[in-house]
Image (cartoon, rainbow, N blue to C red; front, side, top):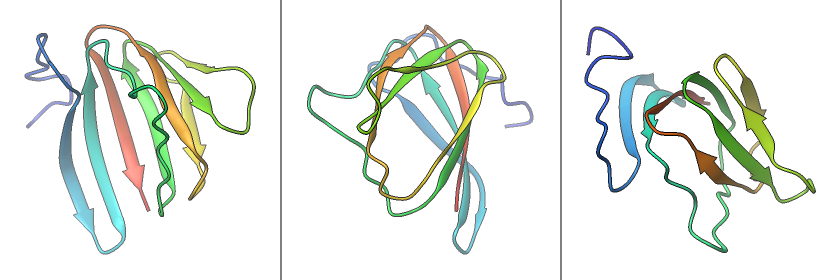
Length: 102
């Protein structure tokens, strides 16, 4: 994939996760969302840190320890500590994320 915006599918039944690079405990992924959200009652509870940025589109995250969603637009990013429970509550069509796990 020569460009992060190349081949962005428009018709996805579920999010698309693509590993772009990685070594040891570090992994970089492109994530494409098209209206997907976390299933009701589901919380991500990861063992690693995740830094994520929205490159295209928009999204909302809910953290279990916060009362309101965090809104993310183009260029907005967030660092998620290990075991900080979170879920995706909204994604716009053709949202492209870049995520770094470490």
